[in-house]
Length: 355
Ligand SMILES: Cc1cc2nc3c(=O)[nH]c(=O)nc-3n(C[C@H](O)[C@H](O)[C@H](O)COP(=O)(O)OP(=O)(O)OC[C@H]3O[C@@H](n4cnc5c(N)ncnc54)[C@H](O)[C@@H]3O)c2cc1C
Image 1: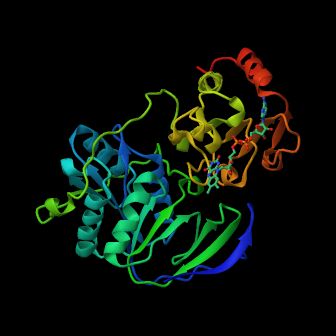
Image 2: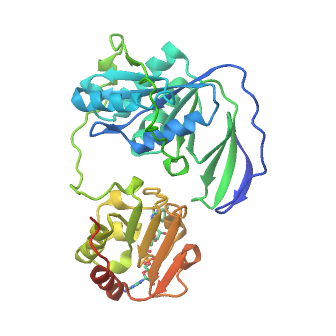
Image 3: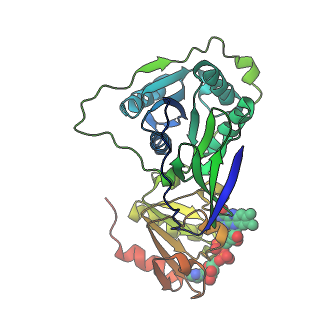
């Protein structure tokens, strides 16, 4: 269904301009929404931006699930993005509190049967990567993942080979066209301060025919995560990353102190994660998180291709490495050939605490 037609190498690659073909019918899109602490997650808002770039005649509905006051607040937050968001769909049920693929995929199936969406989109987060493929299998369509550019309504660009080549994919299947997008490639829409538009209409999803028992193939046990005041790795403006060269979990605390001073998130290479210095939710790269912060600082990171796949789109890259031939210097905007155990303490001394 999805065919890979053109290959282009490396970052900053641009395609010859392709004139968008006019779409004569009104299209409707369902965005699978994630929320946290009463707010729609920035990655979901990026998915809304992606949906709006498909066509100006796109009617965008966002689906939010769960229950309680956090859901209520997130629904109001989503509704405030009207007219970009045409409708907020609320699936109010305890069984949707957690992102279990079986439950959510059945819900997506139910909504598709009812509304016949042209597109179903989610961010390429753990949530989206978990739910969208299962939903696509149930709906018997081929999903397109990790989209970084929407060239035409059915023509997309996505990275392949760990980000070393870009592939243009034309979707030739039936509706819905299902996709995950890289949130780092689509800006978060802002609510205009001077706008006096109404909030988007809110509709409750009728879950009376939703077969809850059928979805109960898996159970949510618990979430284990570290309590931290630092920003989330995927959305942070500044990321400081450490590699194997940090040698221990204790030494990683140096990097955490630097992150606190800069208001940054901490990242790590897979080698540092595998060595047990930090948990794997800090891993940046092909098999970790994809980040594109304003500033990415890499300490003792060699710059293996799989690591670059997760951070090469950062706006400014600073690398500190003892080895002048380390590949990280090929993508760095600023490089320092030095021992990180001298550089980090000096930075801690000289950088004032961020308020
Ligand atoms: C399928 C697959 C998927 C992968 N996915 C990922 C991924 O998602 N993310 C990821 O990061 N990796 C991933 N990897 C692993 C990747 O190939 C590299 O092995 C890893 O990124 C290396 O981590 P590193 O740079 O910390 O370690 P190393 O390669 O060991 O590099 C350490 C660097 O630190 C420098 N150094 C040493 N001491 C100091 C010092 N005192 N001061 C300054 N510099 C110093 C050295 O010069 C060296 O360049 C994947 C590999 C495979 C096969």
